[in-house]
Amino acid sequence: MCIGIPGKIIEVGADAQQLAWVEVCGVKREINIALVCEDTPAQLVGQWVLVHVGFAMSLLDESEAQDTLAALQHMRAVGMALDEPV
Image 1 (tube, rainbow, N blue to C red):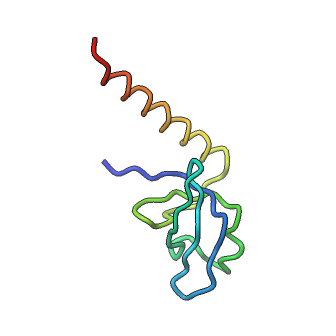
Image 2 (image 1 turned 90 degrees about the vertical axis):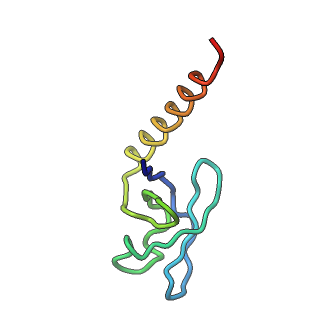
């Protein structure tokens, strides 16, 4: 199964590779924004994106991003509970 993780773009580069930095749950990661950058990269700062294997796959609104993060955190909590001895 492949899962995309919501991240907020906090910084963009100016090079031809269209790289940016996103923050995901307090962790900063470098990603490629070529698939979502339709204009200038600077316009993406502050936007939420769905990140998968180092690429921003699509833009998200903040509500959708927060809902997805909450669902992923809940899945992790459920998974941890299932691992506990009975």
